[in-house]
Amino acid sequence: MRKTLKIGSRESPLALRQVEEVRRLFPHVAFEVKTYRTLGDRDRVTPLSDVEGTDFFTREIDEALLRGEIDIALHSSKDFPEVVPCGLNVILETAPLSKNDCLVAKNNFLLKDLPPKSRIGTSSRRRKEQIRFMRPDLTVVDIRGNIEERLTLLDSGKLDALIVAHAALIRLGLEGRVSEVFHLKDFPTHPKQGRLSLAINKERWQELKFILSEQAPAIRN
Image 1: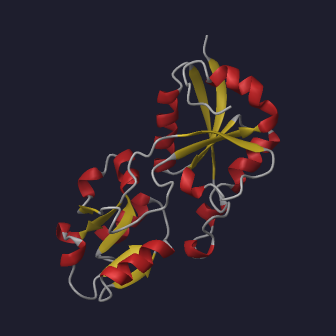
Image 2: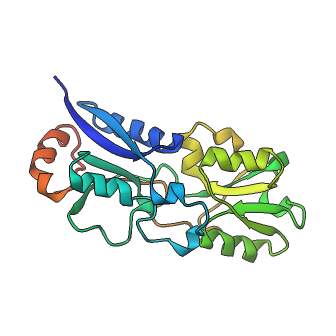
Image 3: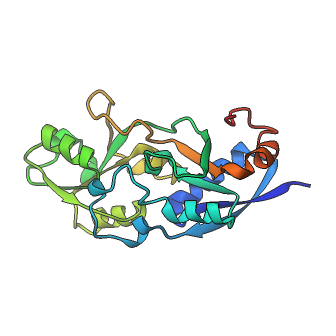
C-alpha cells in the first residue's frame, strides 16, 4: 500500500503541473494536494522587482508546513526566499527543465523585429533591464498574473509581446506559443530558473526521508 503525503502548492495551472512532476519523481508515494493563495497571488499591485528574494510567493505554504497541515511544500526554486525559513529544510532541487527566457509575440516576431514602440510585458527587474538594453525603442509594461492571464493580455491586444520563462510554457504544453528562445549569453536568467524545490519541516526529516528516498537517491541528507 502506498504511503500518502500531503503536498502544498500554489493553485495556478502551472503550479499543479509542477505537482505532477513530483508525482513522477516519487511513484511509490500517493500525494494529496492542498493548494494555497499566497501573498504574491493576492497582491497584484506590488512590483515583483520590489520583492525578489523574499517569501512573497511561498510564505503561506511554508507556514502551513510548519503548522503540520502538509508534509511537503513545493516551490519554483526561484520563488524560494534567499534565506531558508527557520525550521525548514530543502531536501530536493530538480534539474532545470529549461534555464532560458523566451519571447511570445504577435505574428511570431523575433525581439529584433518587433516594431518600435511595441508594448512588451514582464514583471522582472532583470528582464526589464535586458529589454531596455537590447531594444530601448520598445515600451516595457509591468504585468502580473499567471501565464494564462499574461497570454490573455497578448491575445486581447493589450500587449504586443511577453517575456516569460521557457520552462513554464513547456510545463503547460504551450511551447507552440514561443516566438524565440533567448540564448543565456544574450539574455541571462535567474540561476535557479526552471528548477523545483521541495521543503519539509526539519523535525520530520527522518520520517519523511524513509518514505521518500525509497526510489529517489537525489534526496539530500
